[in-house]
Amino acid sequence: MSILVTGGNGFIGSHTCVELAEAGYDFIIMDNCSNSDEKNIEVIQKIIGKNFKFYNADMRDFNGVDGIFKENTIDSVIHFAGLKAVGESVEKPLEYYENNVSGTINVLKAMNKNSCKNIIFSSSATVYGLNNKVPFEETMPLSAINPYGQSKIMIEKILTDLCKADLEWSAVILRYFNPIGAHESGLLGENPKGIPNNLIPYINHVALGDLPYLNIFGNDYDTPDGTGVRDYIHVVDLAKGHIKAMDYGFKHKGAEVFNLGSGKGTSVFEIVKAYEKASGKKIKYKIIGRRAGDVGMCYADIRKAEKVLDWHAKYDIEKMCRDSWNFIKKQHGN
Ligand code: NAD
Ligand code: UDP
Picture 1 (spheres, protein in one colour):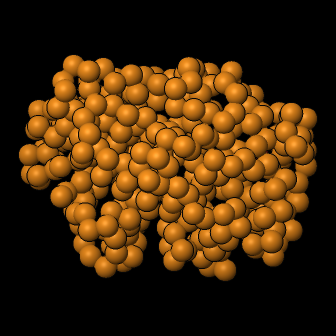
Picture 2 (cartoon, protein in one colour; picture 1 turned 60 degrees about the horizontal axis):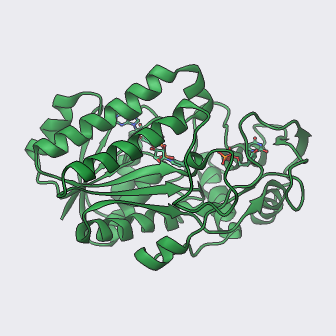
């Protein structure tokens, strides 16, 4: 079986490629490296101990994507490629819709043309919007307050419509909660360019001493300690979820949605404490106002993934923080 992994050079995609190899699948990566370092390809090859094909290609170029299908026999696509910065999506909506939505339509058209009708898609918990009550269930109404979230809702709809129109299609839609952590080797992980927006990448740099303190966005939420609660999931657990989702997709036609999270909520204060323990570093912080668009609590109802995919997250917050710290330390030669 050969799998095309779009965005396979990125954070979640690279970890998933390692798990694909582990499970005995061949894969090909297509990535334009707009948000990742091409060196990751060598790192993945080093971890799995073998080579694979890599196309430095942009999914917005239909002929390029079509060419990959012509040159290879592809049984399924795991589709990670996309832009993911919420704030940037508000500033550059056209770029986000063009890249995420038009890019995905190109991938789907190329798949259709080459009779590959099996896809796993990276959606997000952000599609649950601001009005649902935790834990979030797959059947809840969807809404988005920014173009990034809207692009995920649109793609989910496109996939659902495609599966209705052509009964040969299979689309497994995975709504990720908050992936953190890194590969145990410390060679793969998340290290965004510039000042990070997300909690763990920010804390990583406070621990390294590059940033003086963490700004905590609000301690007046209706949560046990007042800070925001999220469902953090180790990226390796998440990557393993894709193998289960793909196996499911090979056996079932139609569109199906699954939450991939741990099912547990953890507050910002709890993360700070766990990270301090894992790294032995003091994480200084200041409480500032809430960040626009943030919900107080976000965690998954994971019963469907447990029951149907026979999957659940194994690693706890301590392990997630340990692996994040191990990765960032290695990146900075500490
Ligand atoms: P990432 O940015 O590390 O990986 C995405 C990869 O896609 C990058 O390597 C980038 O270069 C590539 N890419 C972007 N546009 C492309 C294009 N037009 N053509 C080819 N390649 C392109 O992000 P990630 O964290 O690994 O996320 C993967 C997917 O999961 C994304 O679709 C993201 O929206 C979704 N997701 C991520 C999170 C998260 O917190 N990381 C949460 C929910 C959903
Ligand atoms: N957060 C914070 N300071 C930061 C970044 C994040 O206090 O510099 C909080 C944020 O308000 C939320 C949690 O940490 O409660 C996780 O934020 P992140 O951006 O990582 O994920 P998301 O909010 O997109 O789920």
